[in-house]
Image (cartoon, rainbow, N blue to C red; front, side, top):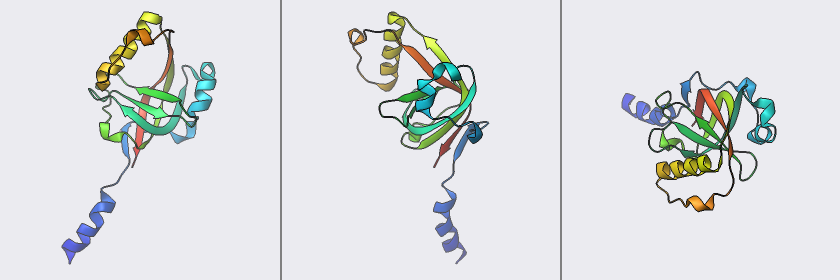
Length: 149
């Protein structure tokens, strides 16, 4: 009877949120759409965002992309390689990340190199001529992340 009870509880015990670093601070929550529409107001400030995880770095687990509450918007969550390692299995789950929003302005060549690097990491093809405008990239450098299960 003891074994049966333990086996019945096992599925309940195996589901838990996963925390990286300090974990996310829900008191500083800002929607991704508000953040991106007013990025200069949030630049270099500590905030928390949430969203569905739509992509994870396949090589080192050093970044994730959170889907915005607005269609066709997303925000990259990026750590220095090895600081936190996000599992590819997090894709499709909801995440929360607390950190500092940083702005990175790139020229056209840097933009092409950036997209080429992303394509290489994800194992997809890339045509540099498809990029015709320079990119200003906003990303969150987190101190804490929580992946909800």
